Length: 150
Image (cartoon, rainbow, N blue to C red; front, side, top):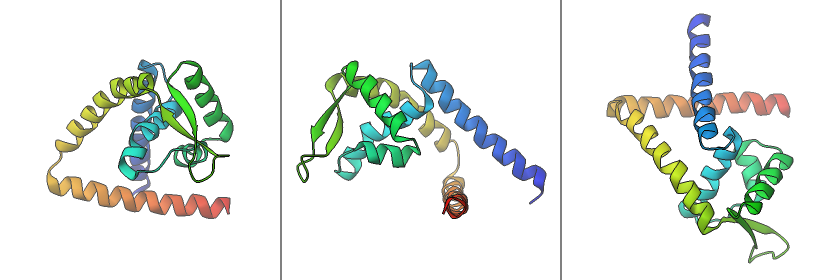
């Protein structure tokens, strides 16, 4: 692949990230808080597992301070509550309140629709190829970044 093509691909990814950041701002959030809201709203239903501050930090590549500040803000607004984990009552898990779930639905439902519409404009073969190549690229990049950090 030519260097020019690689840079074009990276710019496309950066523009995609900027689209999500802009969407978040339109709804009074930051890009990071949108990511956290997505995890809070979907992870428990998909996995049956609780969301903790540690999980949010790991999944969004955020610092504990960023996660804690967001949680503190959302708790003050009535969107989120901390509940003790049954396995270890010293630890807390995060749960959206009814008000928080309403906020999540108002923000995430349209976003899911836009993403789905964009994806379904691809053929089934293109969808499969996009998924396979994106997984491979992400795994390779993650391995490189983790190796550098390690």
